[in-house]
Image (cartoon, rainbow, N blue to C red; front, side):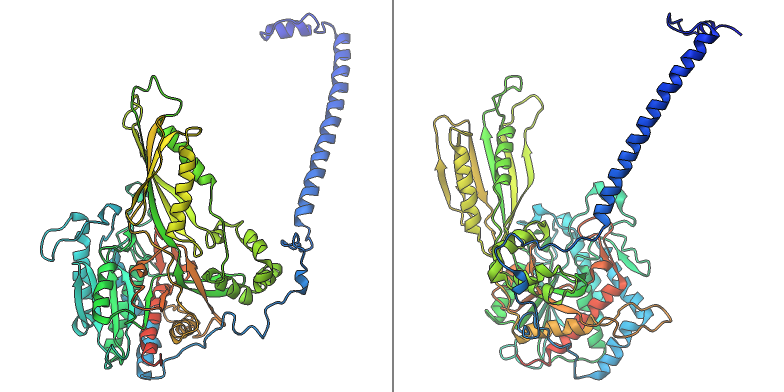
Length: 629
């Protein structure tokens, strides 16, 4: 055997002068190494045990049930002594009885209990929705102020789909096309009138609204779609494609309901109007605004009894099923900030370039948010009260706080503001959504434009938002800060100079787009109109609309569906109909677990949810004829 040093050398390693060179030295070295290894092993074992102990403590601490703690414990109040929801709270979130049509029971048998349960008819109806999706009716922001050309003349290519849609709907629904008066409004909007036996002056009509247009599909997202966005793929369970959820589903459901009522021989006592815009996704200024004007000219202010448009739907929350109906909407403004500065070569930049200055302005705006408030006239409070009263799984302290809101309002607002989903029901939101500046890598930018979208809280106004931003920007324009000349143009198109300095490094202009929108009027929930829609929802949506071929499902599967008012943070075409009626309700008869991809990839709706929508509009038309307003 070669000495250890020789072995190391032959393996190509340098001989260390301290390496053992004899067997006795080797044994001694091995003993020393074993002792060191034993010590290190013990250290490792101890360290590992310590880690395991810490992990055990952590998991034990997190999985062991803890006593419930009051999130409002900082209040000098005893919530245990506060009132809870009880039998004496009938006035809070009153639930109208399910409303069943009493007349024309043959129509109930033929349609509601017949066709709408028939697998073959359901497939045909789903295919018609799919056909509507195959017609590309995207709309784009740059079209908002572009008027359509007169009927029969060439229009911009982006609107070609709307002419195709008009042709399709006339062929797909021949009875509707034959028996209802159809008017083309501003070329593409559709206005159908189903005249009743009674005069509209004494028996105000029902208006059912929807829109033909859809949001665009970005080219960058095409490879993410399971089925192409305008394929209208129908697999027997889901209808796929852009517009299947927002909101060709409601438009087609409305016309399906009318077509089948006509086929059953139904003749309305009170007039029913269908109003379909074509630019809701860009605020409805060419569609619903023109439809509203025509209806106002014909019926006069307050000339409509009830108007229903798209809105929230049905979902489960806190252990209960709620159907949410929008009774108001937050306000809306779009604002632009335009910053102009001197240009130059990028090799000799100022302390802050134009884009740098705009970045500081935007950061300051985002740091100065609006204050949340929960006023008594905010529909969100009604929504909370319904949810607390009927949601068995809601935190019991939260239930009591909502029930006794007048005593704990500041703490309740603070608690709810922790979650953005509830915060912006009480607070004006502001989002910088677009920015553009600079034209070349080595040139200093001379102009930057930023756009801000604001959704205005119920307790606020367009003027309040303008005052907030003007005050903030005036403060920033001071020479001790950014040194800018600052002007503004408000929503009334009034321009004003707020700050000027001879040492200005640039000029800042703030402008509110003229079609700024105040928060919507709140529709009442103590009227026959509310009882009509709420009672119809409770009847229709108690039924299980899942039907398997060859299998008859139990009719009433869901007990106690709760109807609750809702504040909508987004806006609909109803903004243009305020003068027609106080009874404006926003509701989509669709279920949250049966729709996917709204405004994004793989948009789709379950056939059962679409059929439920058909049934709702079918029954709302029938029930409307029987209510005394």
